[in-house]
Length: 112
Image (cartoon, rainbow, N blue to C red; front, side, top):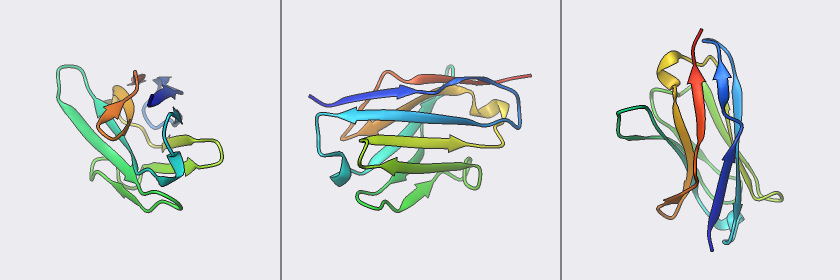
């Protein structure tokens, strides 16, 4: 059974940073491309980033490029999202995603 468990969200001031984690199990993590998506209140899901399998090449949405960094630790079956220079419009529930499924999400709120 695929399980994805996100953590690391919270309340942060504009310009601040957070690092999200996603613990994965139930599949061969090192062979899996992984993504981060987010959903702001009242809005549709928005793709944030994807990292390829293995050493993992990364791609980012224009809205986060240069501020967010996705990485993975295949030994720990864990996906990360380092978020810097956060803006109020980054406020959303963040999910990691694999094979069409996602975890329960972690809330990120950017507010002064």
